[in-house]
Image 1 (cartoon, one colour):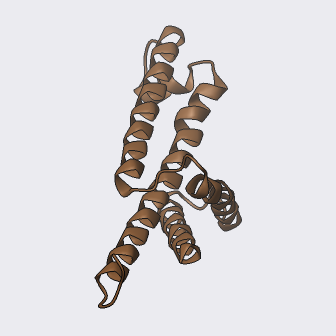
Image 2 (cartoon, one colour):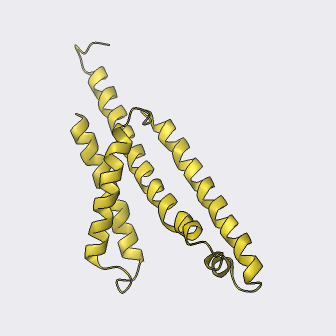
Length: 144
């Protein structure tokens, strides 16, 4: 049954990438780029979902999502504050872009959001597994 849960998780990843692809202009990222991103996220997601310390319950995945949002907000704020030193004017995004650290903006714009998408798909997968377990347990003659 876990292979079906993995398929559900991969479909959730594909759905999120599809939404992003619909929102980002095609001039910036090609369809092949989106497929490549899906492949990378799938290769990172499967081990994240099956690891020894991987969350099992949906609430644990939801906690990871909350921590990911907090980490991204803090990384972005750090970029804004560092960028404010070199660029007094402009928007928060412009200040973050001028923080002087390519890792910092990469962390806030790529790495943490990728983790968020993987964790969100893990949450969908965990909800599916709980639903299957509940349906199996409620069948007549099932052992409980």
